[in-house]
Length: 336
View (cartoon, rainbow, N blue to C red):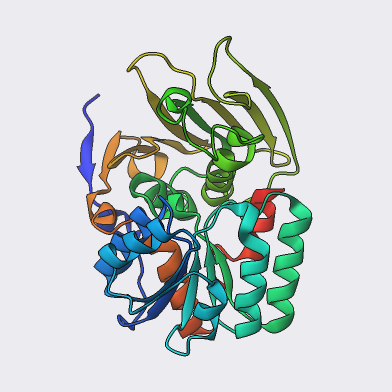
Protein backbone atom coordinates (compact mmCIF):
# COMPACT_ATOMS: atom_id res chain seq x y z
CA UNK A 1 0.00 0.00 0.00
CA UNK A 2 1.41 3.39 -1.02
CA UNK A 3 2.19 5.90 1.69
CA UNK A 4 0.94 9.46 1.39
CA UNK A 5 2.86 12.43 2.72
CA UNK A 6 1.26 14.57 5.43
CA UNK A 7 2.55 17.60 7.24
CA UNK A 8 2.50 18.18 11.01
CA UNK A 9 0.17 21.13 10.31
CA UNK A 10 -2.34 18.82 8.59
CA UNK A 11 -2.30 16.61 11.70
CA UNK A 12 -2.76 19.60 14.00
CA UNK A 13 0.54 19.08 15.83
CA UNK A 14 3.53 21.44 16.36
CA UNK A 15 6.10 21.53 13.57
CA UNK A 16 8.84 23.57 15.24
CA UNK A 17 10.69 23.62 18.55
CA UNK A 18 9.20 26.28 20.88
CA UNK A 19 11.67 29.01 21.82
CA UNK A 20 11.48 31.85 24.37
CA UNK A 21 10.15 35.26 23.42
CA UNK A 22 13.43 36.93 24.37
CA UNK A 23 16.30 36.22 22.01
CA UNK A 24 19.04 37.86 24.07
CA UNK A 25 19.27 35.61 27.12
CA UNK A 26 22.76 35.66 28.67
CA UNK A 27 24.20 32.22 29.47
CA UNK A 28 27.19 31.07 31.49
CA UNK A 29 28.75 27.68 30.64
CA UNK A 30 30.34 25.51 33.31
CA UNK A 31 32.66 23.02 31.65
CA UNK A 32 33.86 23.21 28.07
CA UNK A 33 34.49 19.62 27.07
CA UNK A 34 33.32 17.82 23.93
CA UNK A 35 29.59 18.37 24.55
CA UNK A 36 30.16 22.13 24.26
CA UNK A 37 30.61 21.50 20.53
CA UNK A 38 26.87 20.80 20.39
CA UNK A 39 25.59 23.39 22.88
CA UNK A 40 27.56 26.42 21.68
CA UNK A 41 26.39 26.49 18.03
CA UNK A 42 22.83 25.67 19.13
CA UNK A 43 22.70 28.56 21.57
CA UNK A 44 24.24 30.91 19.03
CA UNK A 45 21.70 29.89 16.36
CA UNK A 46 18.89 30.86 18.73
CA UNK A 47 20.49 34.25 19.38
CA UNK A 48 21.35 33.56 23.01
CA UNK A 49 24.58 35.11 24.25
CA UNK A 50 27.33 33.05 25.89
CA UNK A 51 28.81 35.66 28.21
CA UNK A 52 30.94 33.54 30.57
CA UNK A 53 32.73 30.18 30.59
CA UNK A 54 34.51 28.31 33.39
CA UNK A 55 36.77 25.28 32.99
CA UNK A 56 39.89 24.28 34.97
CA UNK A 57 41.62 22.99 31.81
CA UNK A 58 43.68 25.70 30.00
CA UNK A 59 43.13 23.96 26.66
CA UNK A 60 39.37 24.03 27.19
CA UNK A 61 39.51 27.74 27.99
CA UNK A 62 41.42 28.34 24.76
CA UNK A 63 38.70 26.51 22.81
CA UNK A 64 36.09 28.64 24.57
CA UNK A 65 37.88 31.79 23.44
CA UNK A 66 37.91 30.50 19.87
CA UNK A 67 34.28 29.32 19.82
CA UNK A 68 32.46 32.01 21.83
CA UNK A 69 32.35 35.76 22.29
CA UNK A 70 32.44 35.42 26.08
CA UNK A 71 34.52 38.13 27.73
CA UNK A 72 34.60 36.30 31.07
CA UNK A 73 36.53 33.02 30.70
CA UNK A 74 37.90 31.64 33.94
CA UNK A 75 39.11 28.58 35.81
CA UNK A 76 36.75 28.72 38.81
CA UNK A 77 33.03 28.24 38.22
CA UNK A 78 32.22 30.33 41.30
CA UNK A 79 33.29 33.38 39.27
CA UNK A 80 30.55 32.63 36.73
CA UNK A 81 27.98 32.30 39.51
CA UNK A 82 29.03 35.70 40.86
CA UNK A 83 28.89 37.34 37.43
CA UNK A 84 25.84 39.62 37.40
CA UNK A 85 25.78 39.49 33.61
CA UNK A 86 24.96 35.75 33.68
CA UNK A 87 21.20 35.10 33.78
CA UNK A 88 21.15 31.31 33.43
CA UNK A 89 23.75 28.57 33.87
CA UNK A 90 24.36 25.63 31.53
CA UNK A 91 26.26 22.87 33.37
CA UNK A 92 28.28 20.77 30.90
CA UNK A 93 30.49 18.89 33.36
CA UNK A 94 30.64 15.12 33.77
CA UNK A 95 27.98 13.91 36.23
CA UNK A 96 30.71 13.13 38.77
CA UNK A 97 31.25 16.89 39.20
CA UNK A 98 27.64 18.03 39.12
CA UNK A 99 26.36 18.43 42.67
CA UNK A 100 28.71 21.20 43.92
CA UNK A 101 28.20 23.18 40.71
CA UNK A 102 24.41 22.95 41.01
CA UNK A 103 24.62 23.95 44.67
CA UNK A 104 26.63 27.06 43.74
CA UNK A 105 24.12 28.01 41.03
CA UNK A 106 21.23 27.56 43.47
CA UNK A 107 23.00 29.78 46.00
CA UNK A 108 23.44 32.41 43.27
CA UNK A 109 19.75 32.13 42.35
CA UNK A 110 20.45 31.40 38.67
CA UNK A 111 18.21 29.03 36.66
CA UNK A 112 20.07 25.84 35.77
CA UNK A 113 20.20 23.50 32.80
CA UNK A 114 22.45 20.52 33.41
CA UNK A 115 23.68 17.92 30.96
CA UNK A 116 22.37 14.40 31.36
CA UNK A 117 22.41 12.12 33.27
CA UNK A 118 21.32 14.24 36.20
CA UNK A 119 23.82 12.52 38.55
CA UNK A 120 25.61 9.25 39.25
CA UNK A 121 23.07 7.91 41.73
CA UNK A 122 19.49 8.61 42.77
CA UNK A 123 20.30 10.00 46.22
CA UNK A 124 22.49 12.70 44.64
CA UNK A 125 19.67 13.54 42.21
CA UNK A 126 17.20 13.85 45.07
CA UNK A 127 19.50 16.12 47.06
CA UNK A 128 19.94 18.52 44.14
CA UNK A 129 16.21 18.56 43.37
CA UNK A 130 15.40 19.30 47.00
CA UNK A 131 18.01 22.07 47.18
CA UNK A 132 16.72 23.83 44.06
CA UNK A 133 13.11 23.30 45.08
CA UNK A 134 13.58 24.84 48.51
CA UNK A 135 15.24 27.88 46.93
CA UNK A 136 12.68 28.17 44.12
CA UNK A 137 15.39 28.03 41.44
CA UNK A 138 14.28 26.58 38.06
CA UNK A 139 16.33 23.44 37.39
CA UNK A 140 16.14 21.35 34.20
CA UNK A 141 17.98 18.48 32.51
CA UNK A 142 19.14 18.54 28.88
CA UNK A 143 17.20 15.52 27.62
CA UNK A 144 17.61 16.90 24.11
CA UNK A 145 16.40 13.75 22.32
CA UNK A 146 12.83 14.85 23.14
CA UNK A 147 13.27 17.73 20.68
CA UNK A 148 14.89 15.72 17.90
CA UNK A 149 12.88 15.34 14.67
CA UNK A 150 10.74 12.23 14.66
CA UNK A 151 10.94 11.83 18.47
CA UNK A 152 9.28 15.23 18.88
CA UNK A 153 6.57 14.49 16.32
CA UNK A 154 5.90 11.01 17.72
CA UNK A 155 5.15 12.50 21.14
CA UNK A 156 2.63 14.91 19.68
CA UNK A 157 1.04 12.27 17.41
CA UNK A 158 0.50 10.04 20.43
CA UNK A 159 -0.62 12.89 22.69
CA UNK A 160 -3.25 13.87 20.10
CA UNK A 161 -4.64 10.32 20.25
CA UNK A 162 -3.89 9.42 16.64
CA UNK A 163 -2.85 5.87 17.54
CA UNK A 164 -5.31 5.47 20.40
CA UNK A 165 -3.99 4.14 23.70
CA UNK A 166 -0.35 2.98 23.46
CA UNK A 167 0.27 -0.58 24.65
CA UNK A 168 3.85 -1.13 23.44
CA UNK A 169 6.85 1.16 22.90
CA UNK A 170 10.24 -0.11 21.74
CA UNK A 171 13.72 1.11 20.84
CA UNK A 172 16.46 -0.96 19.18
CA UNK A 173 19.96 0.41 18.71
CA UNK A 174 22.86 -1.45 17.15
CA UNK A 175 25.89 0.84 17.33
CA UNK A 176 29.68 0.85 17.15
CA UNK A 177 30.76 3.03 20.08
CA UNK A 178 32.74 0.18 21.66
CA UNK A 179 35.14 0.79 18.78
CA UNK A 180 34.61 4.49 18.06
CA UNK A 181 34.93 5.58 21.72
CA UNK A 182 37.44 2.94 22.82
CA UNK A 183 39.89 5.65 23.91
CA UNK A 184 37.32 7.91 25.57
CA UNK A 185 38.65 8.64 29.06
CA UNK A 186 35.20 8.77 30.70
CA UNK A 187 32.80 6.55 28.74
CA UNK A 188 35.19 3.67 28.05
CA UNK A 189 35.98 3.34 31.76
CA UNK A 190 32.47 3.98 33.06
CA UNK A 191 30.75 1.35 35.22
CA UNK A 192 27.33 2.24 33.78
CA UNK A 193 27.81 3.36 30.18
CA UNK A 194 24.68 1.73 28.72
CA UNK A 195 22.55 1.45 31.83
CA UNK A 196 22.78 5.10 32.93
CA UNK A 197 24.98 7.26 30.67
CA UNK A 198 23.17 6.12 27.51
CA UNK A 199 19.91 4.67 28.75
CA UNK A 200 18.86 7.92 30.40
CA UNK A 201 18.04 9.06 26.85
CA UNK A 202 16.02 5.96 26.04
CA UNK A 203 14.21 5.64 29.37
CA UNK A 204 13.29 9.32 29.08
CA UNK A 205 11.93 8.85 25.55
CA UNK A 206 9.69 5.99 26.65
CA UNK A 207 8.25 8.29 29.32
CA UNK A 208 7.95 11.17 26.84
CA UNK A 209 6.14 9.17 24.15
CA UNK A 210 3.75 7.34 26.45
CA UNK A 211 3.16 9.96 29.13
CA UNK A 212 3.63 7.32 31.84
CA UNK A 213 6.30 6.39 34.37
CA UNK A 214 7.68 2.86 34.67
CA UNK A 215 6.66 0.94 37.78
CA UNK A 216 9.54 -1.51 37.48
CA UNK A 217 12.30 -2.40 35.00
CA UNK A 218 13.89 -5.78 34.29
CA UNK A 219 17.30 -5.42 32.66
CA UNK A 220 20.04 -7.77 31.57
CA UNK A 221 23.52 -6.70 30.39
CA UNK A 222 26.14 -8.79 28.64
CA UNK A 223 29.55 -8.29 27.03
CA UNK A 224 31.39 -9.59 23.99
CA UNK A 225 34.72 -11.36 24.24
CA UNK A 226 37.41 -8.83 23.44
CA UNK A 227 35.20 -5.76 23.79
CA UNK A 228 36.95 -2.50 24.64
CA UNK A 229 34.68 -0.90 27.22
CA UNK A 230 34.97 -1.63 30.91
CA UNK A 231 31.20 -2.08 31.35
CA UNK A 232 28.93 -4.46 29.45
CA UNK A 233 28.01 -3.04 26.06
CA UNK A 234 24.85 -5.04 25.38
CA UNK A 235 21.62 -4.38 27.28
CA UNK A 236 18.09 -5.72 27.02
CA UNK A 237 15.40 -4.24 29.24
CA UNK A 238 11.65 -4.46 29.73
CA UNK A 239 9.79 -1.60 31.39
CA UNK A 240 6.48 -2.29 33.11
CA UNK A 241 4.34 0.85 32.91
CA UNK A 242 1.40 -0.85 34.58
CA UNK A 243 -1.65 -2.44 33.03
CA UNK A 244 -1.84 -2.06 29.29
CA UNK A 245 1.62 -0.66 28.53
CA UNK A 246 5.05 -2.29 28.10
CA UNK A 247 8.33 -0.72 27.06
CA UNK A 248 11.26 -2.59 25.50
CA UNK A 249 14.87 -1.53 24.83
CA UNK A 250 17.52 -3.55 22.99
CA UNK A 251 20.80 -1.67 22.87
CA UNK A 252 24.23 -2.83 21.76
CA UNK A 253 27.32 -0.76 20.97
CA UNK A 254 29.33 -3.85 20.01
CA UNK A 255 28.68 -3.91 16.27
CA UNK A 256 31.77 -4.80 14.20
CA UNK A 257 30.23 -3.84 10.85
CA UNK A 258 28.54 -0.86 9.22
CA UNK A 259 25.04 -2.36 9.52
CA UNK A 260 23.82 0.02 12.23
CA UNK A 261 20.22 0.40 13.37
CA UNK A 262 18.23 2.80 15.54
CA UNK A 263 14.60 1.78 15.16
CA UNK A 264 11.71 3.02 17.29
CA UNK A 265 8.05 2.09 17.32
CA UNK A 266 4.96 2.76 19.38
CA UNK A 267 1.83 0.66 18.91
CA UNK A 268 -1.61 1.72 20.06
CA UNK A 269 -5.06 0.18 19.94
CA UNK A 270 -5.98 2.40 16.95
CA UNK A 271 -2.71 2.71 15.05
CA UNK A 272 1.10 2.75 15.08
CA UNK A 273 4.09 5.01 14.54
CA UNK A 274 7.53 3.80 13.47
CA UNK A 275 10.67 5.89 12.94
CA UNK A 276 14.44 6.05 13.31
CA UNK A 277 15.80 7.53 16.53
CA UNK A 278 17.60 10.28 14.60
CA UNK A 279 15.25 10.24 11.64
CA UNK A 280 13.77 13.04 9.58
CA UNK A 281 10.35 11.38 9.14
CA UNK A 282 7.97 9.01 10.87
CA UNK A 283 5.53 6.51 9.45
CA UNK A 284 2.02 6.64 10.81
CA UNK A 285 -1.01 4.43 10.33
CA UNK A 286 -4.08 5.64 12.17
CA UNK A 287 -7.70 4.53 12.31
CA UNK A 288 -8.68 8.18 12.79
CA UNK A 289 -6.96 9.04 9.48
CA UNK A 290 -8.74 6.26 7.60
CA UNK A 291 -6.14 3.55 8.08
CA UNK A 292 -4.00 4.69 5.16
CA UNK A 293 -0.21 4.58 5.79
CA UNK A 294 1.28 8.08 6.00
CA UNK A 295 4.74 9.63 6.17
CA UNK A 296 5.13 12.72 8.35
CA UNK A 297 8.05 14.99 7.45
CA UNK A 298 10.16 16.11 10.45
CA UNK A 299 12.48 18.44 8.52
CA UNK A 300 10.84 21.58 9.96
CA UNK A 301 11.67 20.37 13.48
CA UNK A 302 15.20 19.44 12.47
CA UNK A 303 15.85 22.96 11.20
CA UNK A 304 16.52 23.87 14.86
CA UNK A 305 19.13 21.96 16.86
CA UNK A 306 17.63 19.62 19.45
CA UNK A 307 20.06 21.18 21.95
CA UNK A 308 17.93 24.34 21.72
CA UNK A 309 14.95 22.36 23.02
CA UNK A 310 15.81 21.91 26.72
CA UNK A 311 17.39 25.35 27.10
CA UNK A 312 14.58 26.98 25.15
CA UNK A 313 11.99 25.30 27.35
CA UNK A 314 13.84 26.32 30.53
CA UNK A 315 13.90 29.93 29.36
CA UNK A 316 10.24 29.72 28.34
CA UNK A 317 9.39 28.33 31.77
CA UNK A 318 11.06 31.35 33.39
CA UNK A 319 9.14 33.70 31.10
CA UNK A 320 5.85 31.88 31.73
CA UNK A 321 6.33 31.11 35.43
CA UNK A 322 5.90 27.33 35.04
CA UNK A 323 7.93 24.19 35.68
CA UNK A 324 10.26 23.11 32.82
CA UNK A 325 9.11 20.06 30.86
CA UNK A 326 12.39 18.31 31.69
CA UNK A 327 12.72 19.71 35.19
CA UNK A 328 15.12 17.86 37.46
CA UNK A 329 12.14 16.96 39.66
CA UNK A 330 10.38 15.30 36.73
CA UNK A 331 13.67 13.75 35.60
CA UNK A 332 13.85 11.76 38.83
CA UNK A 333 11.47 9.25 37.19
CA UNK A 334 13.88 8.83 34.26
CA UNK A 335 16.74 8.21 36.69
CA UNK A 336 14.69 5.77 38.75
